[in-house]
Image 1: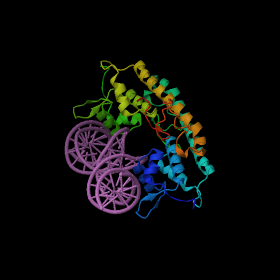
Image 2: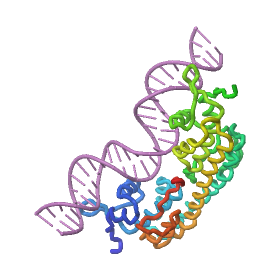
Image 3: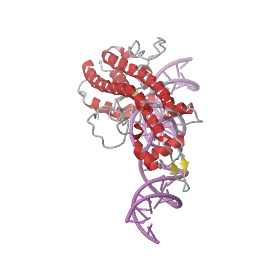
Length: 154
Length: 154
DNA sequence: GCTTTACCTCAAGTGAGCTTGAGGTTTTAT
DNA sequence: ATAAAACCTCAAGCTCACTTGAGGTAAAGC
């Protein structure tokens, strides 16, 4: 059959440039699946390679494993995901990345003035509102809410 | 004297929008300093406010506390840092941020093709080399080396 | 057949950046 | 004067994304 699952953990790990322990970990989170041979060793279908590269790509885009997991949950589970399925996911994440890039640019361009400005009071700081919620609902004296590593899809 | 240190932890925390425990933590790392009153409670100079806002801004730019600490180590320690001192720091970090933004844009723009492409072999992947080290020293089969949260100033 | 390499599970450790809690003291408000 | 709020220290806990290690089994190479 075409569906042979004959890749060992070691081989998959090597091809993907990750450690065996990561594969175990991803499996424990339900991000990837494996079958077992007679000796209880994991055997993977080729499909897992793309799945892992998608995981890696998503991580680079700032997506957490939790989010990747729930995105994967929406994949058709009756068939192997197609190129199109994967691209739909990646496009969603791309949008998030675009937003974050915009945020970082805004941050970069205003930080200089901000550090030099009188916003020690931390009110009216240009960066205070340099976020998505530009709605001007100033309710405190909190600057710079979002961190660079934060999620974008709350 | 002008140098009165009369801000309590609680007040500083509130004004900066952080928790008292963070102030303790920053102090334990040597990022900020405090004096003590008769009852052993921390009292801060106003200067600390700017210092904290710089910390927060740097974090948003993706700079680790370690890096912030070593950047602070280069500040003149015989006098209170001036606006200029702070701006020098922030400009350095801005450059890093600019680089990272460029990386993220490259990532965003190539990820779609990559997910759809035949790079399951993970060689010759456009993203594999989409980094700083464009020198084409392909020595393995590792894609997408850098993570979104990574440092830029190694 | 034997040895080396690869694999298995499960628990615990890592690092960054904090937070929480216990047990106790000081300051502030009434 | 007393109660409440704020503060103190120190150790331990938390989240994320893994890694490491112990103790043991399976597969591959010669």
